[in-house]
Amino acid sequence: MAWIPPLIGREATRYLVAQQFLTRLPTPHGIIYEPGGLAHAARYFPLVGLVVGGLSALTWMIFAPILPSALAAGLALSVLILTTGALHEDGFADCCDGLGGGTSQERALDIMRDSQIGAYGGIGLILIIGVRWVALSGFDLSEGIAAFILAPVLGRSAMVVLLTFGTYARAEGAAKDVKDGVTRSELMIALAICALIALLCSGFIGFFVILAALIAAVLWLKWLNFRLGGYTGDGLGAVEQIAQVVTLLCLAAAWN
Image (tube, rainbow, N blue to C red; front, side, top):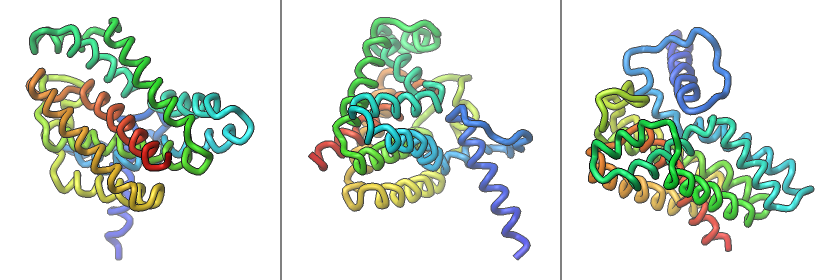
């Protein structure tokens, strides 16, 4: 059984690569990147969602019993955003600016590359955070725990869909190392992890929520293909946010 430790070590490294790519959580020094390591790490994107969602759910568990639900949800959502360094929110804002203000593919990509935020991006951030905040504040304690965990898991699963079926729109960029290597096998592993977490969090309702989030991811990819000729790193961040919103809306409808 000598193969078990190397196998565990390889998969642990892949998870840590995913965590390092998607969050600001500390990782051990000296992670060895294998060729295509980030592409293989995509299978663990949902697990990263479980970790960051778990931290926000823990915050919700602590404050929801003693604070108004809106305030507790705001604190827990802040933990979620800070844990990722607002990576996905930034991508969503850039997409709003580029797709809202760019009349051509080249102009949209140029706008998205600009670090400054415009009116479309600012309005988009208010809406994407506001909708999540309101939805989360409407859950009771146990529902909120499930929602805080499931939304980030599905958000990162949606990213794997784009990486598997999409085409990268730029010659260089934040996601260039992963653009060609994510296979359908990686996607199947990611979706299996996602399905298990969804089942544990919300029962069989979770499978309908997964379906809705995946449909949203496919529609977003089609829109990016139409406007940009493919996805970008910002597009990956945006689909994570879109899938989170779809997840929370579906849960709110199911539990209302």
